Image 1 (tube, rainbow, N blue to C red):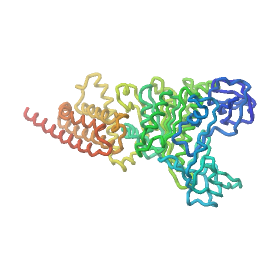
Image 2: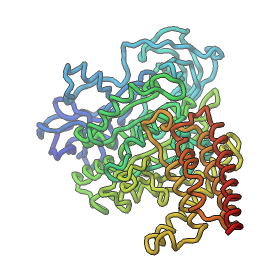
Image 3: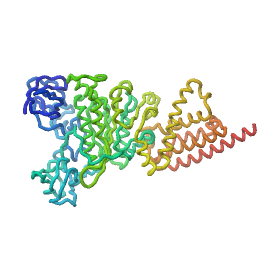
Length: 599
């Protein structure tokens, strides 16, 4: 089927003579066969979103239909690759055009065709066995960190006619033949294709009850993320979104990381591309890239491809989830993706909603975040996997009431709000604990109780209330100063300072402080709160906070410095320090009582 270009408006091309085309069909536009996708049909007119630069396209040039939706190749070779927004590997594009500059119309496959993979079939499977969607046919060791399951595609079921023996195969080699109930024979390969806008099927979704351990204390303890959860990191320019996202991707205990650089500046993506090959996976010591897929679609690349990059990334995430892995998808940033939606909607002359964004912005965000979740997956053996989605949001001027942030809050359950004032005062991560929240605290509390300490929820809630109380007291201090406060309130300010400096702050570039295990986090929180309980008893007995501060200042400083000085495998040192602080506190109370008695 061939149509003709009628007009060109930026990334939007209108073609006539497209009677047989379908919505979301992938087409090739112009003499150079640029990749595009139909996103509106009107009679025989097709409105095509082109994912490459349309400069130089002329009316009258041909449009070729492919008969299939925009799809991505899924199979071994995805990990360690750097893809553009529509799934083309940048290294293969560079080799094809013999230039570091991406040319239009380059056709390169997502997966390498010449590389052979060691395929190991499942021993229990024999010809004549019934197989269905999601059944594992065999395994490929894709990287030293990830064993890649070769699965029956979701749309195939029937009787296994043949299964190739153990050996080396390319992604195009047939490794199994299935006879479907209709009598057709389907050849299965190491790779399969899947439409990016269509969620992959699951059997049953579960509540996200396992925490995603990030090693960042403010996240894990105060605003935890669960595996299969959804979250957003909104913040103005310079507040530390990218560093926080890098820390998440580097330190979290997800098995596979999908990092989407969606419309951010080129230098930020360059930094990611330079650093990721050097990062070491903290759980195994292997290069982090061995469990990572990078999708680069920066602000100087075609704007329409930003929209596709989000769907490309989440489809790859679902594919690895189907193998039973916990996957973390990080999108930086969904604001730029929403701007691409606004650009296309404007070209389509659609009625704009708030701030020019299309009226369907909320439903598109809901579509994206709804693909997160922890689920039981189809096929044998039985598997449970998860996709966790964290999107950065870049509200202009840090205004959290703007449409992208406001609509995102409707579909996420963890809100990590970055604050420029905290960042400028060198408090990192600059997460504002007053307006941030997590709806997973109660769900993950059981895991903390069983694996770390049963008192975790009690102490976490008490510490959080202290921080909220400190915020209320700041208003009084601004008016009348600290002298107008009661001794108990003065103690609250002192302990809140310990929490801020010794717990909430974390240096992403310090080898000891960058990552804190759940055990170390608990010990640090426990030590601060036990000091608070003991000091509150002393205050109730009449000992002034100023006196306690003078006597214990050096030891409290040591408590703050456990961030840097105590390694994750030395948490017993925090217990020793706490015993010394409590002994010194008791001694100070006795001394004060003697002084009062003498006076």
